[in-house]
Image 1 (tube, rainbow, N blue to C red):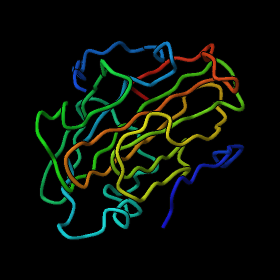
Image 2: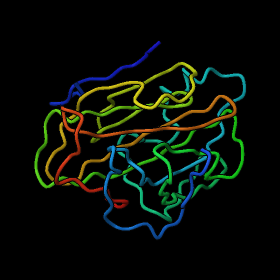
Image 3: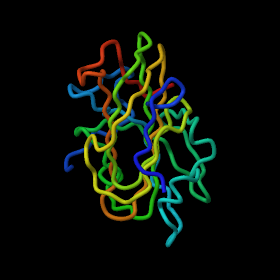
Length: 206
């Protein structure tokens, strides 16, 4: 079982009312005042096999090459016999709620949210905090940096680690699995002292 796996990077990573979910989100946005990411490209729901362990399924790819995903709004992906479309979503809360965006409850499902962090310089020791309901996996610039394989309720900033933002575009792929009922994810980026990052923007295209 892999739980709370966060690494430092130098190569390794040391609602109610959610919704504005349109493709018309600004090309460049900011982290919210507390550092939470509110702008994502979402793909969901992906049905998971009934009776299978979601913890085990988390560690399998639901989309081939998921670590290197770089989607844009409107792109389509065939998963099994179903075609799904990536969709820009800007949340009104500091967490992402898949069921609120989809306007339905989706048990035994997987979903992806991807964002692009544009930095005007290399920034070491960026604090990344993560919460999810239920299991979650994160790839940062193509590197598998985090997996939490147990069911849980959402706790903002439940897990914490450090990454280095490189100058230019940084890609975050956040996969969240849902066993039943609530299906959520949250991520925050701050400087090493917990303050606002400077020179950082959020994009919804690579």
